[in-house]
Amino acid sequence: MQSTLFLDAVAIVQIPALKKQFHALPRDHLLAMLRHPNLKTDSEDTVLALLHSWVLENNPDKWTRRELLECICMQVLSDDFFQYVIPGVPWICEAMAVEEYLILAKFRSMRANVFKRDGMYTGHDSIAHKPA
Image (cartoon, rainbow, N blue to C red; front, side, top):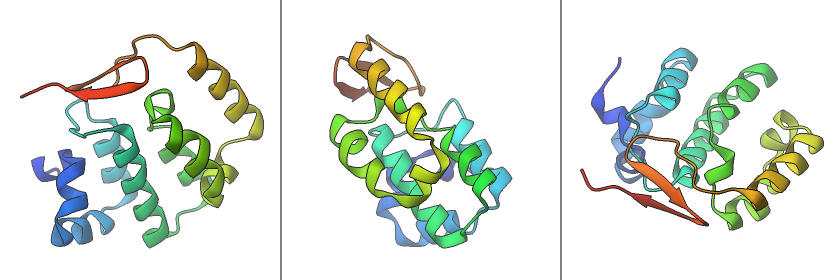
């Protein structure tokens, strides 16, 4: 079920039928999508929001949630998302130990340019999508 449609996070969010198909993805397909170098997105916040919707829909076990969360590039999440959204999402808090969150918060404060997804780059606190 590897489709190029599932390599566009924004399209999945915007098209209800596509989001429904996304929620039906099995774990292995979701992991492949999250790890794919050509996954297109406007920000890592969108990718984590999609993952959150999949977790709510599929209720995977603790270890699967941890494995999925490891696919998210936490250092390029927006500051608001990192500071206010993540601490309020129980499954993320359960998957990420407090110590990990604090270490990551310290790392984020020292970050420089970090490259993550193809077509996306960071500069200071912003993420810009490179034109296709």
